[in-house]
Structures are given as C-alpha cells and as structure tokens.
Image (cartoon, rainbow over all chains, first blue to last red; front, side, top):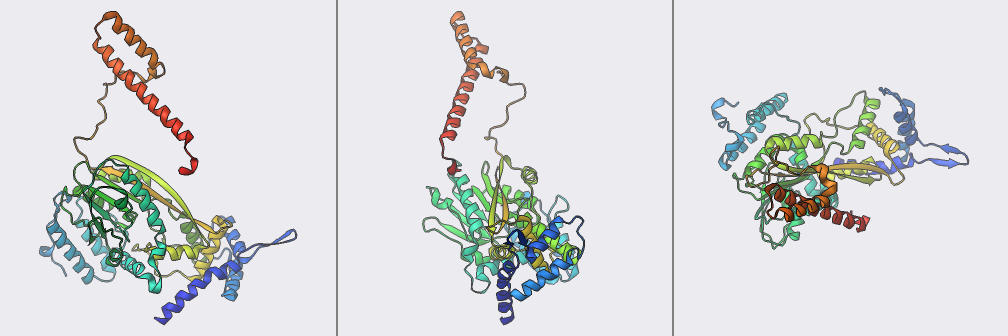
Length: 69
Length: 404
C-alpha cells in the first residue's frame, strides 16, 4: 500500500533529522546547545514533571526537525 | 453465545492429555471469533480463569496480536531481511547452548519452545543423536527455522500455554527468550514440568526486570510532558526472585538462576524501536495505546539521548535471566539431615593437624575407632576440597581475562 510505504520511508528520515538538531557546537568558550539537547536537559533537570513544562524548548525542537525533514 | 454444556470438562494440569488440548484449542478459537468489543477482554479473562484451578491469573498479553506481529516480522515488513534482527536471540541461544553442553547427559527428545528462527547451536555442539521438536506460535517463523540435516527435527505450531505433549515424555525443554510473552506463566511452567521425564531439566532464558528501562523511562517522561499522562509501552518483565518463586511453585528443584546484562548501542531511539519491531518484540499488551504521536517520539528520542546517550549513540539494556530447573526424582541428591554433621567448620584451618592426630590415635590403639574412622574420612574429604579450590583459584588467576 502506497500510504504505508510512504509512512515507513518518512519514519526512516526521523533519526537523521533529529541528529541535525542535537549536536553541541563549541564556539570559543561558548557552547551552542542545539534544540534536542536543550529539551533533554530541561526534562532531565525538572522535578515534578507536568504537562507542557518544557513547551518553549519543544517548540524550537519541533521547528528544527520539521525544517530538517 | 456459548452455554455451559459446550465448555470442556475442567481438568487439573496433572491430567491433561493431547485430546483435551485439541478441544481446548478449538474452544479458544471460537471464543475469540464470537466475542467482540469490550466484552471480549472480560470473557477471555473468564475463560482463562476457568482453565486454571489455582485462582485468578494475569491476562496481560494479546496472544493473537503477538502471533500477527511475529508473522509480520518473519515476512519482513515488506522487503526486509528478517535475519538481520536475530542478533539478540542468536547471542542468548549460543549462551544457552553452552549451558546445555555442560550437562553430562544424553538427551534423546528435545523440545524447543518459542524457537523463532531456530537458533539451536547445541544441536551441532552435541555429538550424539537426538530428535528435536521446534515449537513456535507463528507458522511463518517456523518455516524459516533453521534445520540441520543430521538431526531429525519436527516443526509444530504450539502455543506456550497449551503444550500438546504427553506426560513424562520429553528429555529436555529449551526456551530461548520467549516466555516473557506468556500470560499464564505459572501454568506454563507447570505444564513444562508435566511433560518432562523424571529428573530432566528445563533450560531457558527470558527477559528480566531491567530490560529496556531507558526506553521505558524516556517514553514515560515524554508522554507526561507532551500529553499529560503515560501508557505502558514496555511489557512487564519478571524479576529474578519472582522467577525463582514461580519455578518452585511449578515444582522444579535444584534451580540455577543467573542474570546476563547486555547493553546494545543504537544511533538513536528510532533505530532501537525499528529493531524491536523487526524481531517481533513489539508491544502486545491489552492496555497498549494504538498510536504514538510523532511529537512524543521526537521528545522521547531527545530525552533518551540527553539522559543516557554517549558519543556512540544510545545504549539499550537487555537483562536476560538464564535458568535451569529439574523435575524432581528420588535419585536426586537431597540436603543432609539436620544434626548429621561430624566435623565442625571451626576445625577447617587445622585439617592437617586433625589427620595427624587421627593417625597417631590409630597407631596407638591398633584398631581404628568408629569416630576416628568417620573423622578421618571427613578430614580427607575436606583436604581434597581445599586442594580442588586452590587448583581452581590458580587456574582462574592464570586464565586470560578476555575469555570471560
């Protein structure tokens, strides 16, 4: 089925798109932390996680992945 | 709808024979076909409860869905090679075969439960003739199962919860990474003990409590943050202590249980999920959510990388419990009676002294007394044990650490 095939192909592109948004770049003494790493850091350091706690970081991450796909 | 006169007579596990298996299988298929909708789960639950005389049992997994998932995995999800995903089962099948080869016994009739694509290395390792019954619940996987030309093997489509073998008929039951999808694990183990001959082993491996904990945590956190709550995406696994209790309850003795922790590194969470699907290990619990939103997936992958990732990718832990249990038999060694000990462990450090004393005693009296005799026997045995331990210790020290 065409829709299933195209869905599967799309799924295979996610890891590459995510990797573009996840590496950290060191510029001089500053770290430019990319979106996925920023989102992950927000989640792992938050206590009492509730819905939409890291909404801002996630929006940035979603934009990045959408552009990278 | 079914009325009570169609239901097969309730039998205890001890009296199950092949004919009862046939009626029960037919009944379960018709039940699944007729009952639909919300009522199905409760009715299936009731059906399973009727077939077990020990009270309520868990009905966590949708076995029909699991069979469908295994079929799809075996057929390659549209153009893939299914043998690419066999690495976990291969590795643990090899370790299991190692353990089987350590047992000094010739097995004539072997049953491989949940064989998948049939990785039985021990068939080539063992140098004597045996017959093997490869059993799996998915016919397509069975078709692709490896067979060797020297060993007669029979392939059977068997559900692990309804074993069609007769009582006291099988020399060895092997189960490699397949019992973690069984609903009625106590019943299944009881049936395995039932079909085994006296003093015959069950050698198996199954996933333990810590398996894929990183994936479980990442998905939970992502779902809480994105959707407000979380659903189970990783199936529940048995812990080591639970497995020990289950085996004891099923009637196995002389248990040997140990854990193997293997961490496999993947580039990201997506590859891990794709591999799990390729192995046929996707989620099939009744309470699974039908969809996983792509927002949640992206979030979970980022969390996985941030919390557990390293420069090579993300690790996924597979904790496998290897167990060996024997069907009881009067010929098996029993623990000694309380109060039958003759030498105190406090005297361990002066074994040589004791033997010298006994020798002197004997020379003096000329006739060895009963107590002196038993003392000398115990002392000799202690000496031998100490020497064996010392030899093993030096062997271990001189061995290459890479061997382990």
